[in-house]
Picture 1 (cartoon, one colour):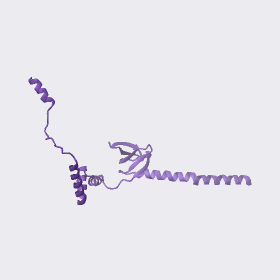
Picture 2 (cartoon, helix red, strand yellow; picture 1 turned 135 degrees about the horizontal axis):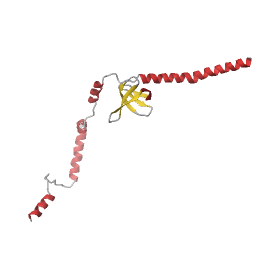
Picture 3 (cartoon, rainbow, N blue to C red; picture 1 turned 135 degrees about the vertical axis):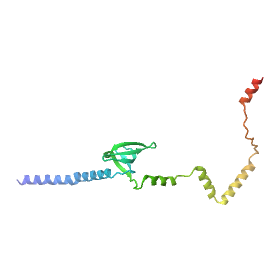
Picture 4 (cartoon, rainbow, N blue to C red; picture 1 turned 120 degrees about the vertical axis):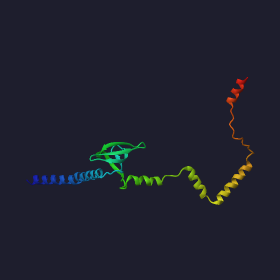
Length: 163
């Protein structure tokens, strides 16, 4: 009987070890993932289990609508297909976000060039002017033609018709 009791004791210890090493951590991880999927809000950027990255536009009880790509294609998918949440959306309304992005738009190239020129010190401007004058002195004299339009094909056709 002592041999049978020892075997049952070892079996119970083995089951407890399996529970604490395998089953409990798996349930804990599953609970975290379910909490993450249930806490998805509009504006969150997510990655699906298929690798699709998108922004949540609308949430429903068991599904979400995400917006993907430059064309802003929207499609609906189940919550269980979300692999991870990359960036949490802000609680601000979308209008405030649009206003913020409008103020941060980059200026056109022409404007940026003029701003850079305005920032250059006077010494650099003088140095560039001197270099430009030296280049003009070294270059042969070039006479620019007036900016008139010359009709080559039509004038020849008109002359041949007169003959």
